[in-house]
Length: 638
Image 1 (cartoon, helix red, strand yellow):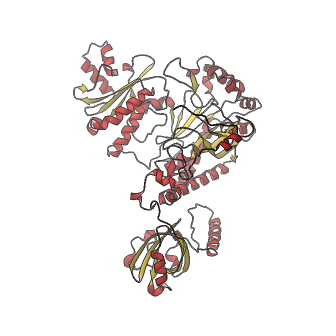
Image 2 (cartoon, rainbow, N blue to C red):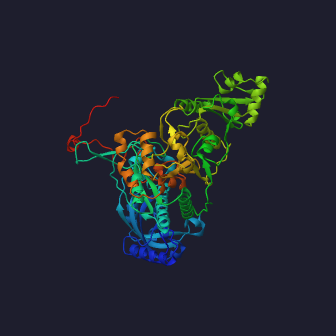
Image 3 (cartoon, helix red, strand yellow):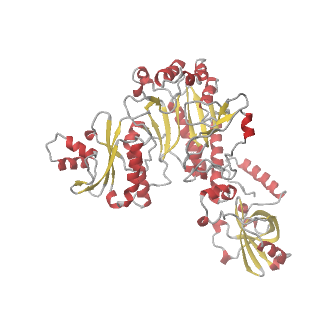
């Protein structure tokens, strides 16, 4: 009987037997016959060879030594006993000189541990290896930190500077293996559903439709540069024009943006495009793919189809286009206190919040409101504590105060205030956030949306709100505005909400030519528990419509418009209706492994400031290197 030493999921029993046979033969003809994780009670009395890292050494007496040995697949306790080990004194001295994570090769016999010593049979604690020979493969110097003592791990920068050590941690080992299995599951699903895996170029050209790019100088000509692709967007549209009905790629993408926990300068996405489809077709494919991945990785059944929600509803109820729907705390629109037709008045009630949060603990909310208003996410947001007589903190500038002052109602203002509070189900002891914002939602999140997220986090930490980790609320967000005002103004310039290749919904097509701000796009985002896993759209395939969007709505300069001439030309040469999507593989794996940062699911990530602290990159190019490309470094003003 062969035991699989790799965490593979193979349904074909014969294939599994063949694989194990090959692995067993490979191991028995090399430095080891087994791995630490593959041995169990069935191996008792067998003579085996193991290789691995020394975890710890316990010298119990002059005649007895215990060693914990670890490899990539598990751990095994080694027993060195004077009466049963040749050259015991020499081998004991050798072991005592080893530092943590020194590499050794051992040979010995698998034996049962004494019954009274077995603590956990589930962890293969009923066996150990009675060693008869030890060979040092690599004596480790003192480590800058011990990756196996979780409570003593240094800061992230130190760990990234010694990433090979950090990757020895079981958590990161598991994350990278889950990533491998996830990629394998995706590839298997896509292949089974007729998709073709096609690589697209890494050296592209600079285009203006997205984030800042990385430029790559070339000796083709002075000043000529490639750009690393932000995504394979234009290439995959060309593949549809070429007649590849179903394309996919696990693609590397690059963006020279400010970094944070969920963003890296280089990242991986599952890129998909299909011809002759409606949005429901590609959404269905993605839902089945998610089902397949969750079943393979977490052995969970994910129900489909996923719920759909409009962008307008998501921003109105949750203040975000990627809402976390595992808990309540919904925002309520209060149109009667809106001051004009271009203003939205909304309220967020935090039940019992006035009793949960002290004045000092309200500081993060106040700071958030200030930064949010400076980013035009709201015009004015105030917070009030509800009491039996109404609410506190209603200053002259607050929306409630201004409304009450302009109210024509003959009722006393206090009664009218209570009526408003009752309409949003606010009770004594609650916190009430009142916000005034433009009807034009420029950022993805509104002020109350950000407050809702912060409040949920703090309430969850205090045990006041249940947010189950094992609940996966997938959702499609649809009906985005095709164009967005760049500023909080009815006459502000329009820009593409997502990218300029998104098609308008068919019923809104006439509005494209007279009221483009009212047009909805055939865009769809896949959201999970407050995280945007990815987004896609049905594309413009009519060259006349694409040209009109470039020239008359986005008002691209002739130079920028010319950079898309190849795309418009291809659309006019018989390009079929098509659409696609891109899912972030890094984010997907982070959710599957419950990792707080994308850096925990990438083997060699960049630090928070975009540097590789182990390889010391980026590095300064020499004058000789720059001269080959006709480049020179200029002083930049601070």
